[in-house]
Length: 215
Image 1 (cartoon, rainbow, N blue to C red):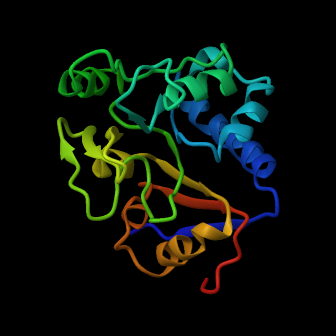
Image 2 (image 1 turned 180 degrees about the horizontal axis):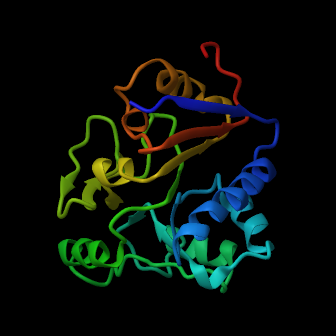
């Protein structure tokens, strides 16, 4: 498995933004479009606001949700709504059509996705989940790319699958807060948590403000 490269900053948003901007360039030097999956949740919102102000070749970037709650896209629980508001209108952002039956929604999203992602930016929960891949929760694959799960609050979720995320050229985990320290340390020492089971095919990085006890 590809080893993890850990970067610890007191405020990781700007270093991660600069890293993403640099990382996009070599992919665009070889291909017309760079395909990027984005984490949901509150942690990366400021990062996306920072990124939205960059002078990027927006017409050559395609963004995808790494996961979504099975709710209306205008709901305050919707990852799509939060990303659209923070990343801005220039970003070409695919989304789960949650007005559809959930299996049809998952299959429709599978057709929107590229053969593989160049970059997958993922969050990590305190329980070690990433995207909507939760510990001790079955994730039923509708296709090789998309699966259906259920979070511990009982809400149905749609997620990119383990195998599809791990086919990404580069995976970047972004996590903050002492509440996630145990999950981070587990990622660095073992692979049993969902976040520990996803690695990029070329490189895997962690950006965080947590100083782990074990490196």
